Image (tube, one colour):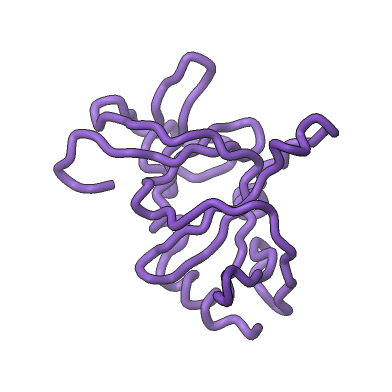
Length: 160
């Protein structure tokens, strides 16, 4: 989130039953489900890697990292299947698996409230804030805390 700005944009997506958002400035692109190649001895939440236009991208499961159940899909959901959000964090690209992409929303800083002590298994240290909506909350992830520099180095340094 840009400091000093009164509003910014979030890319919103569904993980399990909750709606999450990340700063659009951290999002490189959104892609459909790809073939993921597992990485031996990777952390439990790393699904593997995939090739995106000759670039090798590590793929993270926030479901596993934060113990969130995936949405059960029916045949009608097939065209609405999940995918990956490719994030660019300080020059390192990673993919996170999402259940469903939602939309880009404009939010004002004054709409953001501090997170409750514990929210859907994600510790408050990973949450920038929450925005009350008519059918629940939009949870804004602090992606730089979710993937700290030490974690990113492990991912980039993993044997592929």
